[in-house]
Amino acid sequence: MITVLVVSEAGRGRDLDEAAARMPSLELLHANDVEQALDRLARNRRIDAVLLLLDPESASEIANVVLEEDPGAPPLFVAGSDVPGTRRLASAEPAPLLESLERILAS
Image 1 (tube, one colour):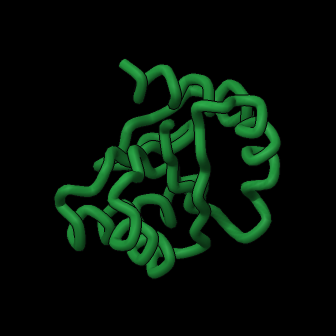
Image 2: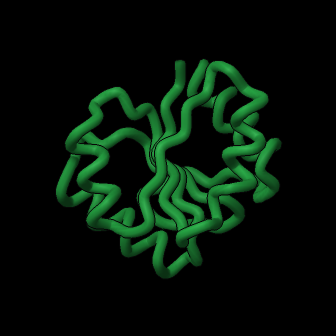
Image 3: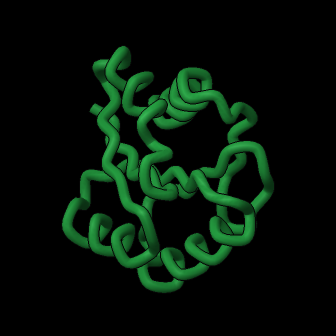
């Protein structure tokens, strides 16, 4: 089982949840801001990756805080933009995005 923490604006993760429902080896957790993300990371050490589905400025801010607060944090990913401290995923569409993330994490 691969566990991914998705940090996005409230309600934006619904499409991802639908795509993840067809991927039995993937579990999604959600956070709406940096405080929730840090709390989830502190409480669940089984998180394999953090996916930031935010505008580049917000994603950069959250990435900086997460990496500062938790240097051992799982890898951080963003969709479609380059953000320092993260890995870029090419697709922003839910199913291809999760499939590429799953491939990276499974290897």
